[in-house]
Amino acid sequence: MEMKINHIPVAVVITAAGSSTRMGGQKKEYRSLGSPSATVLSAATEAFVSALAPQTFSDKGEKIQQKRVDAPRPFQLTHVVVTIQPHSGSAGEQAAKEALFTSPNLKSLWETPFQESVSTPQLLFVEGGESRQESVYKALQALTHHTEQAVPPGEPEIVLIHDGARPFVTEEIIVQVVAATLEQGAAACGIPPVDTQKEVDPQGLIVRHLQRDSLVAIQTPQGFRFQPLLQAHQRAAADNFETTDDTAIWGKYVGTVKITSGSVDNKKITFPGDLPHDKVHSKEAAMNLRTGLGYDLHRLEEGRTLILGGVMIPFHKGEAGHSDGDVLLHAITDALLGAAARSDIGELFPPSDAQWKGADSRQLLQAAWSLVTEAGWKLVNLDCVVAIQEPKILPHREAIRKSISEILQVDVDQVFIKAKTGEKLGPVGNSEAVEVWATCLLTK
Image 1 (cartoon, helix red, strand yellow):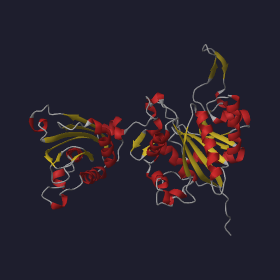
Image 2: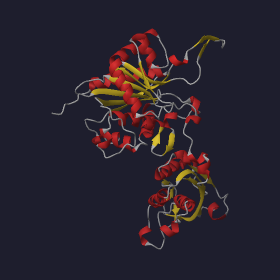
Image 3: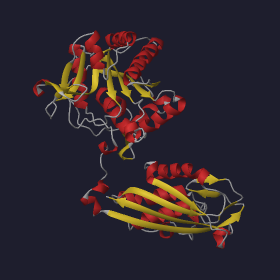
Image 4: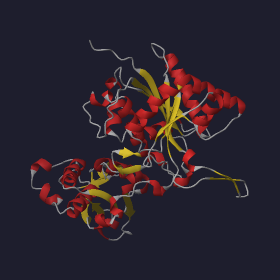
C-alpha cells in the first residue's frame, strides 16, 4: 500500500526592496539576464517554484529545463512573498509583476486567477522598509496576517529568505537548505572564502588573523522555522538590534544555524559587471554580427489613422498604404529581414496580393521576425529615425518603444526611436509624408 506523505508547508520571501544605488539606480532585480524570458527576479523566483512546487508547472504543460533533484521532497511551497520598494504602492507592485512575468511559467501560474488550484502557491507583494532586516520583518508579518485570513487558517512551518538579486541559485542548493532546516531549525548555504581573512580596526590595522578553514561566506537562501524567526525579529526590533542577515538574528535570539553547500555561481548581482556578458562581447560572437538597414516613406492623407510602431497617434492625417500603413514597422521589418538575409517586406507581403490589404503591420513584423529568429538570430539593438513635421512624437516615444519591444519579445532598452522634422521643406516638411530609417544589429 502506498504511504501518503504529509507535506510540510514552506514559504519563500524574495527580497527586492532595495534601491540598487550601486547599479546606477536601475533596479537590478528587474534587469534582463540576456533573454526576453528572464529577469534577475524571475530567474530567482522560478528556481524556488521549480524546486518546491514542480507540479504547478507540469500541470500547465510547461517544462522546466533544470537538473532535477531526485531526493524525496516532503514539503510543499504555499507562499511566495516579494518585497518591493517602500512607498511604491501599486506602481511598485506592477513593476515587480512585469519583471516576474517575463517568465512564461510564472505568468501562466499566477496571472489568470481561474488557473489557480489547491497546489498553486499564493503570490504576495509587500512594501519593504529602509533596511533588508526591516523588509524581511514586514514580509513575515504579512505572512502571518495572510495565513490568519486563510480558510482553513494555517501558517508555513518553514520560511526561506532569498536575495532577489541571486538569480543563479539551483534546486540542489534550495532542497539542501530546506532539509537542513527541518533537521536543525535553521540553515544557510555558504562557500569557503578563497582569500585569507583578517580582522581590522577602524584605523585599518590588523587585530586578528583568522583561520580560513573555519570561515564561510554566507549566501542565500537561508531557512528557518517560521514562528521562532518571527519572534526573533520582534525581539530584534524591540532591542534596536540591527544586522545584515537573518542568521545573525537567529543566532542572537534562538540558537545555532547549520551550513550547507553553496556555490561560487550563486553570486549576488551588485554591480553592472556582475550581469552575464552578452555574447556580442566575445570574439566568437564578433564573427556572427549582422547589421540591417530599413527605409520606408508613406504619404499622409486626411481620414487615415496615423500609426507608428503599433501605436495610434492622434492626428488629422494618417499613412496611406495597402496595409494599415505603419511606416515605422515596415522599415523595422526590412531592417531585420535584410540583416538576416532572409527577404524583404515587398517580397513577403506584396501589395498586389489582396490578402494584405489593411493588414495589421504588427502581425507582418511578427511573421518576419519569426523567419529571422528561426535562423538563429537575436536582436542586440534597434535604432530608428522618424521624419515627420507634425505631430510631436516625443510624448508617444515610450509607448512606441514598449509596443515594438513587445512585438519582438525583447527588452525595451534594446529599442530606441528618434524624431526629426522636415524643417518645412519638401514632402515631409509640408506634412505630406512621413519617412523612417531603421537600423538593427543581430547576433547568433
